Image (cartoon, rainbow, N blue to C red; front, top):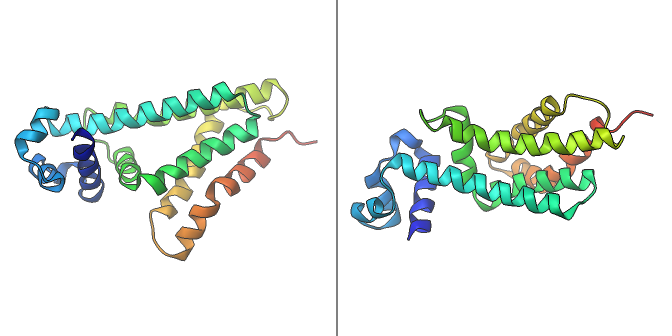
Length: 190
């Protein structure tokens, strides 16, 4: 039931915005009573926090598993890109909700939204630092470079939120093309 409520809330918050969707709307979308919603969540903010926390945990597990595999740096970057774009295909409502919260954060929860980006950037910065130390990535500021890479990803992801043939083509090629583009900028010049 909790998953059903979260799914309905993610869809509503992404479509209408957090402030325009109420607990009654979540209950109607999930086809349950308001009491059922309150049985699982004390407030609308608690639902949003649960959605954000769930995404933070999911990404943390992914990054931990990726790190444990010990793949080459380019493969790690490709996997990060693929995982990011998979979110847009597999859980569009959550992706839209996170984007909405990033651009117009709900007071009191903006810190949690920021953590999603900071954790991803932190992991990417570690990968970049390791690459610099190994001589596989040219010297740069790892944190600034990580955020620049995520900015490129977000620009492409914005295009994915549209529809049509162009968006479908971008979705199919985004991870591979962006990895090649970003990797070419990271490699030391000879």
